[in-house]
Length: 313
Image 1 (cartoon, rainbow, N blue to C red):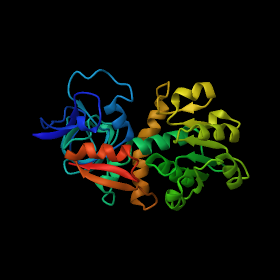
Image 2 (image 1 turned 45 degrees about the horizontal axis):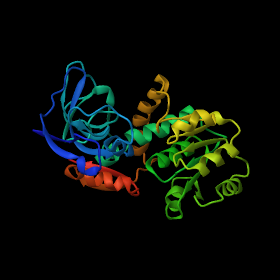
Image 3 (image 1 turned 180 degrees about the vertical axis):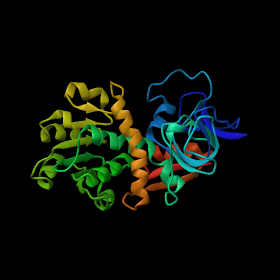
Image 4 (image 1 turned 90 degrees about the vertical axis):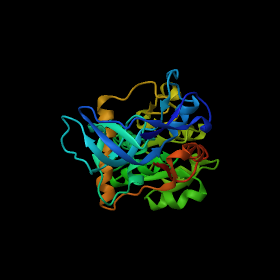
């Protein structure tokens, strides 16, 4: 038997239960994967608690979308993989598990130098960061302001933007300023007076903004700094985006991603794996916990722990 984390009602972390499941076999077009690490994302606890709307629970519900592991079997029609291959998984169902059967197009080869924990940390945050930057066409000549630069998405945004030739400013706490600076951004304190500090740090002006903080001050400063509101994106205040004339991705965005945006999210995984293998990218791991401690993992993420939390089956 395999094991997976499930819940049967919305609620706090205590609703998460380690459950025995049938070890999955791969159907045509799928891979069977022995999971070595599963990434814990804020979306996971929002769905578990009911804070993010989802369908009524009528049977045990699985958790998680991102993982890394080793292929154990290959379904009919799948090419490019064989048992024993190390892989990264993104956008799969029920990633908090010891074993999964996943569509082959949601798996990517994992270089030997990339650990399972790092691979499992990529999916949602790095796909979101990559796609948002592509959607805003950030590149050489841009000065990008990132509200919330020290979290997983923020760190990914900083690194991609710097690699693509942009100057980056990132809001952060004083305690996390060194991490933001190490990644190539100019840290700007969250404290009141944000607009003046940003103007002092970037006298040439700001050309694009990505909001991962969601505060009123962050949005007010963004609107004051960037005339072209289509180059302002929020990842957390989607319900307010239309009224403000800005763009929204994730965070309750009123529209689904376009096929191009979905393709960018998928493109992020192999692109980032190449950068990690070359030593040109960094992923901060904050805590590794056994699969059975999924509830504690959710508590850590909800408390705002530094770095990515991963579960190890």
